[in-house]
Length: 222
Image (tube, rainbow, N blue to C red; front, side):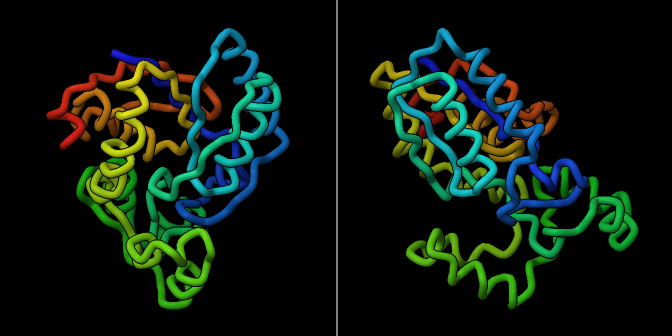
């Protein structure tokens, strides 16, 4: 067992407006920034060795505020594989509009199912994504147009195997600031819980969750 703390980013403008964000780069709200500062107070006694985040602004800003408020002598490391699930054509749509357009059952399956995948992003959105410097050097990232939760697990597995698990195996404490679906997948990868179980985990914004990672080579190679 080793030290892993997961933290969903603070409230974003997409959370406040009940919009599908996915890989859209939406900022924190004022409330979200206050949540990040409160999370730092909750973690005041923690002395992490590293802090990891996605490349999306809402997670990066949460991590920055966390480090500043907690006065940790760390610089967050950003990884695109920690991004939220790519919601394809749903990105930027209000959830109510998505349900009206695609139906409640399909939208619920895409949100909380394991294998359901929303419609792909259009060519214009993919072109902008490919040109984004955060993804331009990563052909795999630039090509992602929509993901199921199972797809996110495949995308995140190299991060778990090659970056996070080796850190934990050395006895280090790592804080991961991410997104609801990505953190659920990380629970699956680090503990062996099924993806079906992971989908049922409710993760509140900026609420720290301690995870007892099981450093079993069979999990690291899952």
